[in-house]
Amino acid sequence: MKDSEPGTRDVPCNAPRNAADCSGWRPGLQRRLCKTARMTPPRPWSAAPVDALRGVAGVFTDIDDTLTSDGAIEPAALDALGRLAGAGLPVIAITGRPMGWSEPFARDWPVECIVAENGSVALFRDRDALRIEYAQDEATRTANAARLREVAARIVAEVPGATLARDSAGRVTDIAIDHGEFVDLDDAHVAHVVALMEAEGMTATVSSIHVNGWFGTHDKLSGARWIVRRLYDRDLDAELGRWVYVGDSTNDQRMFGHFPLSVGVANLREFADRLQTWPAFITAGARGDGFAEVARALLAAR
Image (cartoon, rainbow, N blue to C red; front, top):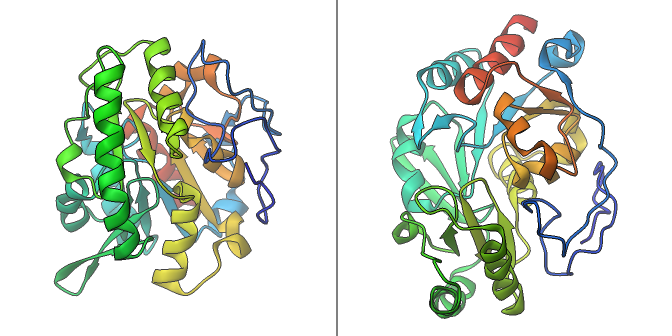
């Protein structure tokens, strides 16, 4: 893992070189032991300094179990997205969900953009059309597609109980194995899936619902940098303190460690024994209620 990017709080770990970060590992997965600088528990979001909130330029957020519950956006979160947009605070969702799954939400939700498939696909409105752009060029995506299918077939054949995520039809640049959305895959089998992905030269990460694997070095953080440059022609690392990141799970840890104004919604505590990097703050509310709590503080500070 390389952690020399400006502003990062992570420090090197013994992860394999092709791993995107040290996040996403559940109890019993002892192959990766990452030490990070932010080991102290987070402060309540209500304690966030108003001066810092007043200068916020925008919000990055995860989707599953941050805005949603059981796959559907919570009313409080949808209302909060609308109020932030109305106040001129853009929200960019960054998710492991696929491009196809993200399309209707990129059209209908009051968000500036959805960066899908862990940083590889950006979906945003361009006048009345939905524009889709990729971090990898077409030749690379085409070459990777066959390899992705081969690895997916190997995993399903070799790991008992492993099944492709139900949203797999909409995936363009990665594969996803369900371990917690509709299938309960135990730690040993999750570890086996990750090991197979990495043996094939893939980057692998574990979210609260899926094991995602892809060819390339992109991740949520590179996707955030890319989209800020693409939409606003600005350098994200030069203004880290002006962006909030909101998440809920172990695979948000690199983002938690990178952003001074990082926030976990309350259900993040379900992963307390699995976290190596906590966010700076945590909300009182869970899921959509927690995101709405973040929005209220930002709007009040303005």
